[in-house]
Image (cartoon, rainbow, N blue to C red; front, top):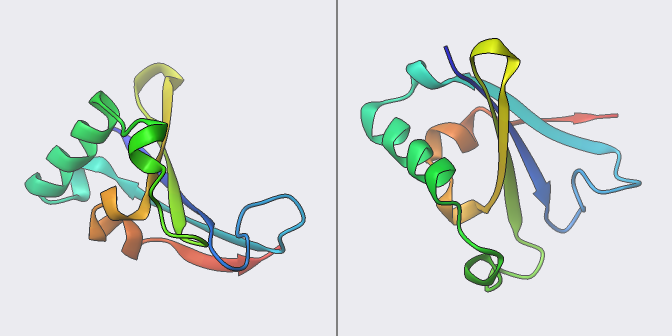
Length: 98
């Protein structure tokens, strides 16, 4: 079973950046997502947006780092703008102070 770890980065507070005291993270089993959301996630891992496509992100906007952990401890990580992330993944992220 694939497990997704989702981190929200950036924003006005610089979440997840060096010196930030806020960490935004969540986990979601891939098989708990709807078929449409699973297809969106698979598409992101198959062909993540290039840096050039992600460049028009809003100033102080969020980006998401998504790590997929699968069989045999194999991991794959992508970083995408907030607009590319399915709502179900955005909803599982919670903030905490470090």
